[in-house]
Length: 81
Image (tube, rainbow, N blue to C red):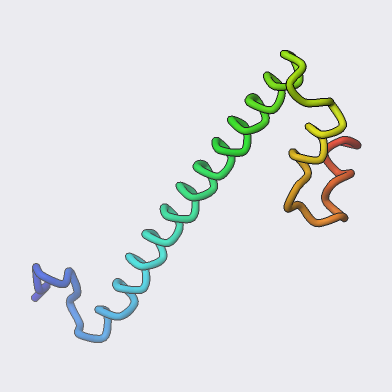
């Protein structure tokens, strides 16, 4: 008989079901985190572009701000692609 609380016919099936739930929650959290980071990065780029457009900062300073915190091997990738 299937236990309605654990949805497992066998007590040995509880662990795999729990691992599946943890995996699904992890995937959702990872995906959500990625979306939030990308949105924040694009918003920052738009703000920096607005500052350049109004003349508050120079284009060279804008490039430095956009590339700040990125590893050196990643900086040229977006410009080449």
